[in-house]
View 1 (spheres, rainbow, N blue to C red):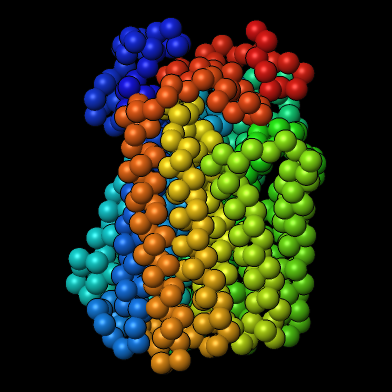
View 2: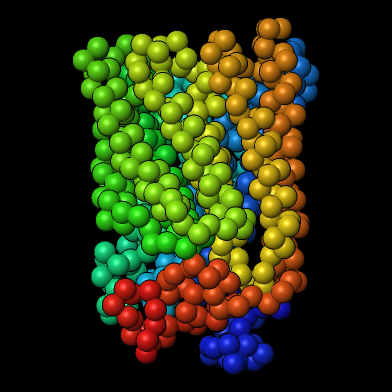
Length: 544
């Protein structure tokens, strides 16, 4: 059995003796009371995959409705609930927890730490997510249905929602608290628990990106909490923060929300950059090109992310000077992002590359993320944004960076580290089927949306004129293809690995892989690095 479903001992030699780790709890108690970073990482990953499936079902309902013009399956009110909840569940339930799962699993292994700094807080920050997710999804079963204000929860719509709005606000508060605790834990772990000899500039890129992401989380989650608390008091306690009748301003909500919302998109992509920066050098069999510039680029993306928020608001009547500032600031942030892409390409340049599944997803990521980046520069130009704001062009753009960005990077990371997690090799053939199936269906789904948007089809509408029918049909077919590809991934790749089916994985399954995680046996023992390891001068090998 694998490390995922069955506890293993201190070291590979004790793998048979499942009671070796201080006679810890077994069965369901092992997971409920988990304080081990690997178990908590696994819980996060399983939770986020569940939420991905829930959010995916909502997306397929949206696409089934839009398969043909006219109202087919759902009424417009329910349609708006679906679009809202799809966004909230995917962002706060699928992508963010998945990256925290990766951090829990990999950060202690990569820096030579025994565990995360605050083990019990780590357990708490995971178990907060479960009731929050239940509260979020339960909105559908409350009187009046789920929130239908868009995932951005703009006032004044939020004032008109039923009781599910309040439960969703509460759920987001709890998820925010979970994120902040997770972030504090990651920062303290990285800054305090690195093995001797591992300086900050020798750390793996994944740890760097997560360190910077954690600071972003601590900076912006309270801002979201503030915005939704003001919404709550406007709804129930007679305040008028966002109500013009009482002297409030609905546009102020947008400013506060996007001050959180734009750094949030970088919270969702920086760990992805970290994963890609681990995978590409491993399969190019070269050192990462421009390590220092990658660190500086990541830091500058994080800093610049705070001064671009109002590019989401070009059509709110902003002064032209404001438009100009936010337009140029947005252009500026594309520079460090491009530095990263050039560095990955330079790493691959003249490398002895092989194309196993993690590498396919990494190269797929670079290609599709670059398209997403370019399509983001276009609405960054204020006069063009006036034309394409709130059309399907925007939907196409952010799905290219969030799905083909965050999600594809997660797949690359999952295939890359799965042998370390479970102790068995996944089926390469199945991995490649999953890659090509996902890649092709993703582009069939989201590429035509650019043309729908440029032709003027608005977002969040349950119906549309006849001229958009053909492209919408193609998009819906692609969406169902993409959804089923992820079910295939779970059934054909994840489940067999978790059950320990497959060829036993060597300690270092990828010959180009570097880093401390490959210095421990596969599957990774329940406890690793109980005594800080002595490292060589590159901080990638254990010498004692």
